[in-house]
Length: 98
Image (cartoon, rainbow, N blue to C red):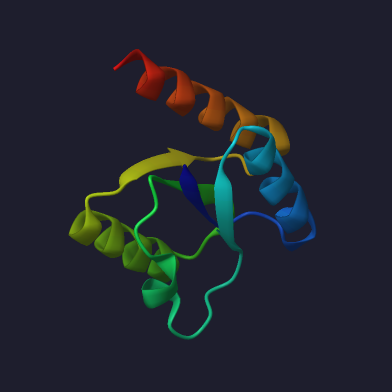
């Protein structure tokens, strides 16, 4: 499963990727908006928005791309490791139940 994480703390970027790997997911992390951001998102299975640490412009770009490619979006206020783990466990348990 592929995951795109938007927002969060720069110092935790590597930790986000390790948490995703532990849950069997491949992750792209975008802490800051870079040129060509919307093209780099791709078509992941899940997009996670850390709403506390992301700009409105970046959220709008991400949501537009997600709607265009029919990507699931989860928004969470906290950008902690525990929050990411909780989102992944919830999403994975729901997707396995289907």
